[in-house]
Each structure stands twice: as structure tokens, then as C-alpha cells.
Image (cartoon, rainbow, N blue to C red; front, side, top):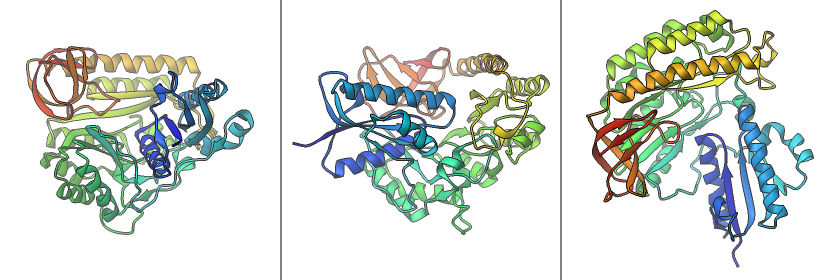
Length: 417
């Protein structure tokens, strides 16, 4: 009788990709895969895997909570063994092993191979392609280099092996991911950059219609890349461009290697060359020594620049990072208030942006069916982090593109017919 396993993945898209590599390994050994939510019913699993996240404090707490829940399932005899791996284990493995004696097996992050790795590709309209791992930017607040190490890019021939397999599987949207995909190739000792890689991918694909770029850095965003996005129909007019702050002193303390002037010039250049483009950014509030005036500068910039999408985070002190050594840490209530102010400001901007779609026809990729309506997504929205389109119709096909007319806008989503 075949053994049954299940897996819970926490954290970012890169973690999901790693989980698919692990799933493929278990399937190759003859295990059967069970969805996690099926365990709590009458089903049982021999092994429950938890792919943990250790990026910032909320992610760590969520991972610890899931580990506790997995151990409870083991006590209830719904699973026989619990395996935990990933970023949290890579950073705090010794402490975790002492605290959670009921876990049967531990290991850290999955090693990123520069050669093509087999992974489990689900029959869904969207997929992710990790082209690099690790980072060379050394932002002072970030623990990723401590977890994943330096930049490691997969060469073009190895990337294309995976692209061909994804394309044959019927995937319609391919999300290109890495810690910073605009740094791709800088460790390979060649002149090739992300633009060259994307051109090779576009020549290779036949069925994939949308390519989305996720996780870029303002310092490495080249003019060639902007030109390619502007001219290539298959690349979504969607740019994920975390700026983190706009104050010159704070940017320097963050070691972002860019300036307010460069950030503003880049955003203006993108909007000029790609007018029909959604820009998503992220910012950090409450960085050590951030004054009220410096925060106000960031808040005013957000209101003025009107980013299409924005994620905001309160600074999280990560041990081992340069920023953790700084004095002048901000009180948690001040960080909480600043975070609220940023999100309230962006909420107004987001509502204005969505209202502009009402009455217009847009293309959506249909993702799932609900009772009486479908859920789709535009090229201007990334999976899971951005809004969706609720489509009033009852005879559409999952994984197909449709032209729809927007009839209403909600807080972060659209309604269409």
C-alpha cells in the first residue's frame, strides 16, 4: 500500500516553488499526495510536511503556529510523522529542535540548483518560474542573504528546459520569480541580463500568453527592460518595484544603493514609455531612527505618486542584520500608527485607480468558478497579492481569456459582465 503525504507551504512564491520540488521527490518515491485540508476530515497521512517562513516576525509566528497544529494532528493520530523544513529552520534550527521534540525530521532551505530541477506542476492556469535565488543587494534590514546565501542564477539553457515543460503543460500565465530578478545573471560572468533571458523565453513559448515579472530592484531596472516590456505583448504591463522608502538618509541606512531622485526618475520613465502599466511597490515604516518628518515625506510621496498597488510593512528587527545593530528603534505603537496612515492613504488611491476601469472592456484570465459567478484576474494584478475580477456569467471555461465589461469597482476588486 502506498504511503500518503501532505504539505503546507508558508511564505512567498519562492517557497511554493521549493515545495513543488519536494513534492516531486516524494511522488518519485511512490508516495501519494493528499491536500492538507483533507487531513482534518476522515483522511489520514503518513507524513505531513511544513515548509516554514522565517522572513519577518509575523511570518515566524505563523510558522510556529502551523508546527504546533501539525503536532496536534500527530497526537490525534491523523498523521504519523511531521517533517519541518524551510527558512525558519535554516535560521533557528537548533532552538526549534529543542522546543518541538515531537517533530520527526528537520532540514533547512531547499538548495537551489543552477541546473534544471524536476518539480510538481499542478494543472492550473498559472505557474511560477524561479530563475535565481539568494541576493547581492545586502539591504541592511533583510535576513535573506543569511538564509539563502549569495546570488545564484540559473543559466539560460537550464531555464529554457523548464520553460518548455511548463509551456507544454498548458499554463497560461508564467510568473518569473527570484529574490531580485533584475540581478539575474550578475554571477554568471557573462554579459547576458534579464532582458536577454526574457527574449529567449518569449522565443521558446507557444501556449503561455502572459509573462509577469515579480521582485525587481530600482537600482537594476534597465532602460532595455523597460523597452522590452513596452514592446512585448506577452509581458504583462505590471511592474513589481519595491522602493521601501523615499527619504535619502533612510535609503542610505537601508543600503538600498539608490536615491530619491533615481526612484522618481525611474517611475516617471516607466509611466511615459508604458502608459498602460500598473506599478506595485512596497514600503517599510518605522525603520530605526526614522523621524516623524521623514515618515511624513514618505506618506506625502505615496499620496502624490499614486502607485497602482502598494504593500506596507512595519520594520521588523531581524537578528544578524546590519539594521538590528542600529540604535534608535521606533516604538511599536508608533510603527503601528504609521503603518495605518500609509494604508489609509493608499486605500483612497486604489479606489480612484479602480474607478477608472468602470465602463471599460478589459481582458481577464478566468481562474475559478463560484456559485453564480467566476473569478478572474487582469494583467494588472498579480496572483494572491492583488485584486480579482468577479464575472457575472455561468458558461465560461477555467484557464481561458475573455473580454469583459467592468460594471462596478469594490475596495480592491472589480465586478464585470
